[in-house]
Amino acid sequence: MSDLVLYTYWRSSSAYRVRLALGAKGLAYRSVFVNLLQGAQKAGDHVARSPMGAVPCLEVAGKTFAESVAIIELLEELHPTPALLPRDPFARARVRALVEVVNSGTQPLQNLHTLEHLSPDPEVRKPWIQHFITRGLTAFEAMMATNDRESGLGRSKFAYGDTLTMADCFLLPQVYNARRYHVDLAPFPRVAAACDTIAATEAARAAAPEAQPDAVADAR
Image 1 (cartoon, one colour):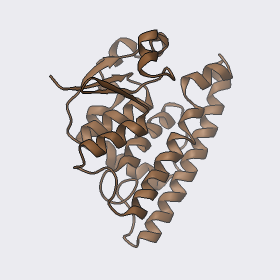
Image 2 (cartoon, one colour):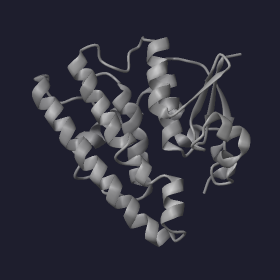
Image 3 (cartoon, helix red, strand yellow):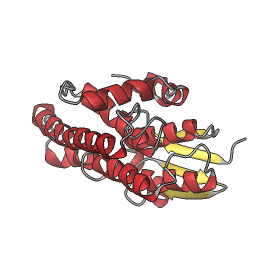
């Protein structure tokens, strides 16, 4: 049995990131499903693992780690190949910047806790979500263009360069949410093309929300 245990929920974009990173590194893990709509993340045993009451959490050899950025960087340190961060420090900083556009600048403004605080009305929530996703993807697209230009290597196949990086683990779940909330992707051709490339990988197919065992009972 694998010593990696992932506490996850099929539609959590943060858990989706970690599933994609685990798949990209070829790491086997066991899933424990935490139903966010039923409030399982608020239970005492889960809050003990994740004080913010969120997923994902990753248990490694009996020790539990929270927050997707920290988890993926831990995986990078424990299993450095295939690498999800470039070796060059400047390239590494650019990948991390793309990660943070999603991690701190976009996703927190559309997560379940934020939406519950905003309004119980889906008609109030939807334009809020669309606004912040559009804002985040606008920045991501511009940063991709800058990175392509300054690298001198031409247009990237992935979010940064021609191999899957940590930035892709954050971009694909965010675009999944963009499509879910009917955000127009036409203004973001680099983002859309990168997502097509990411989605075609075996790791992304396995990590997709609809491929998760808990999606069936909770599908809506």
